[in-house]
Length: 339
Image (cartoon, rainbow, N blue to C red; front, side):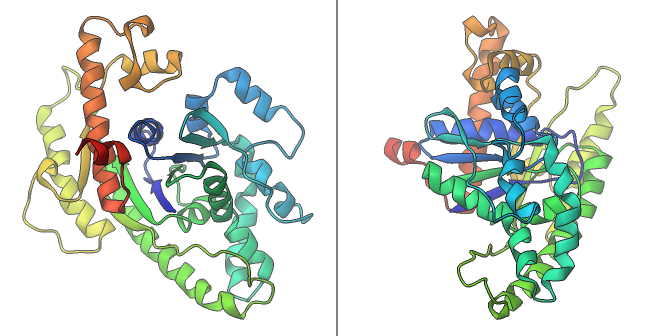
């Protein structure tokens, strides 16, 4: 099982859109994939499902068929996690639905983190709950890959989600806020990795955990994804170029804890997984059609110049999917067959 989390301390950089489109692209490339919505804002779920479907998910009394519903027995002390609820928007693609109620679990995840150092068995069960839910979802879907969307913060829920990740990809925009996000994110990942390693070493000494699967918590950074914004006529081009040029060095220094090398543009940086253009009005069409931008057709309103934009969008996300897969050791059957 390979798990990749898409994470940035800075919100509004298109993180959820990247996860959504990559999930569809991997399904097209023959990779069975789980898209897990571990962001309490549940934006990824809203991209996959109609409002009526979301109402059906969130209306029932707890436990609901969402990520939060999975945790309810554990949080209320009546049992362990329930089976992971999944929806299947397309063949080879499963969704673990998000839930705004997930934010209610923040305090529990936070309080159990220090208790795990004292050898508290329940603390380990809580901390690994998201990891075990993802494992369960992967087994149900017989998936090869899990893509995880998390919120733009450094809180306890994200910490529990990130220790479940083998790899971390960082979507960002060429601006000061994203660079500051890198400065917060890098040291936090290293601290979480070290803190989980110290807890993992204690787990074998804790009674009652013999059959509890523990995530490795490697959280290996595999690179960043630059999402370009629409360029307004009044926006200085020099400022845009300045931030683009600053990304490679900041990523090395803040995230990889390495000395920055000689300046190089992001498109020539080995740590840049890909650069995504601003696709204009394709996203509203895609939201209305409940499909990724690169699957839009004339019937969805993709006419005239949009046809080329759809084609470019497909090529961009295909390249990005291949780049992420190569860093994570994931094989794409459709690419193998074509070769």
